[in-house]
Length: 379
Image 1 (cartoon, rainbow, N blue to C red):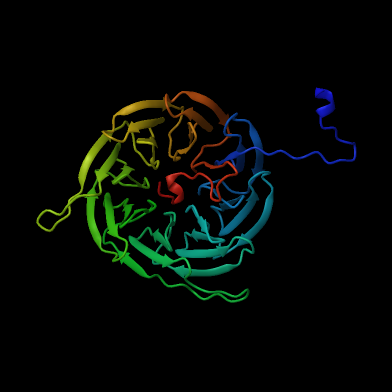
Image 2 (cartoon, one colour):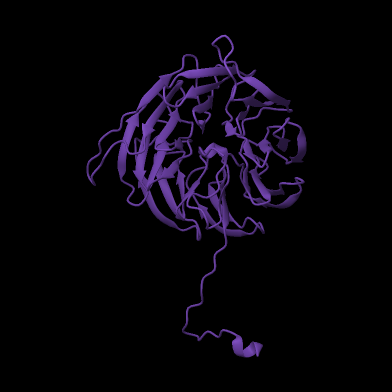
């Protein structure tokens, strides 16, 4: 009976191709990997001509990766790792800003100071805008708007529909507002929680809370070290790390006192080295890497440590969660999959290069994949 039900294939019949989900990560060894998130086995690898600094993103079945050496994008089949398109833009200086995609457009901030909107299918530049300084921060999309910050202390808001283009012409976009913050320099990516945007500064060590509609600073909070970590806006809090060895959790629902807004600390955790990794908040937990070689799982209610996991290198990569696993890259050249409940190792994969970028995961069910906070997504 079992034999009679068995599917037989003739020698001329093409066998069905089976693909598994991939967690995608690159490193300084100039290779991009697609790794099975459950087993830790390699699905595919792609050799590159540049070290991977900006995190890859997933959009509609494709991986998009920008070059750190020149203004160019590689479009990759997320299932096979095969390059489907290459396109160039800008002046060729490269970027470390992680792009973001929506509405068949890829939004890229460049070290030349321009924000680009690139068609994901044709590679044609739909519009671009010259800001007042290099963009290392990653753009963030919220509603119909794009927010981006510069290394000279300015924040811009654009409408996604800004700028119109035919196949051969490009009309520059204009921001709906821009805010210059004296003394600030931003490499932290903005996080949005209505009606505010949060972004941290490396020069004056302030975390800024800005009204989305009016571009007015509601409050600023001074940490004791530069803020490279991109904040997570979660459950009425703003969570971020700083170079002062601390992770901060600020209450964003404060009331004014004598007409002034002063952010309140829900908790502050002291770690053992700089925190440039961006936190990932989910299910009342905060996951964040540290240059003390460890990944921390902190309870969001009070900042207490639930567990830590020690690698053999500094962690600047940001974690991403999927199911019961948290994934993190380390300078020890390994990508780790850990159990979210206990912090125990599920598997690790050696990519033969230090990992600066953050992993992104495609499980075939979402248009954008699972991204870390560094990719401009607010959880």
